[in-house]
Image (tube, rainbow, N blue to C red; front, side, top):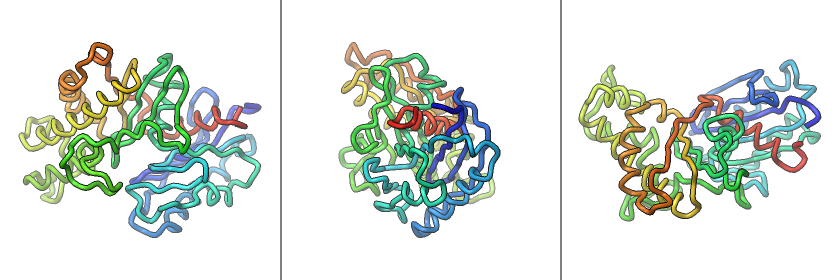
Length: 313
């Protein structure tokens, strides 16, 4: 890069965040708005535009030389379109061209799935730094993932490689909004954890439906339904991780996102379940680490993705 700044967007079912990121991975400016996920596609783009407008007006924008976009998927990096499972208004939506209406045509733009963005970020300056082969996951409103193989982010032709959230782990499971059945996301996402626990009588402290954070807190106190919800989620994650590691061989798995903030409530049963599913010698003992970049992982990763893309350095 001829400058130390790139712009980054992190788009998910709950929030849309934007930042300017320097060449050390430090976030210099950060703005965020809620995702109007149940509204029409143009309303969601308007939220994206609001964040981009703030970035364009920020100090340092004149030095920006690229825009990285990490979006809930699936994405199509070739066409610049997105079809996030948890944003129904976006189906084949032209996100890159929509963003260009704000940032102009001079900047290289890299579009990747949010899981791939987190993989790029954690490999650049997080829990997978210095590791050649890693699966990095985000477990939040949905479940996504990205792969670093032979020291390089591998996004695949369309930008979706490593999308572990839609691996089937329950052959007769519920139909997923993606069209499949028994997907990891349908069992292990924060949304799924909260729904499953709520259907079995767990309530939030105010008597309403629980969130994943409520379930995590209750599980930390040993509440049986909440504990079972996290154990169930951990087994689904472990099955997906074991399948991925069996296919490509991994040195480490990094797990981030809101659900990972539950700490041992998630990681303890995940480690136990992975010991059951990852049986082959080259998969056994696979370490699982919490992500290090926190809430800014997607932003740092989107910045890393555009730095590594053609025209980005």
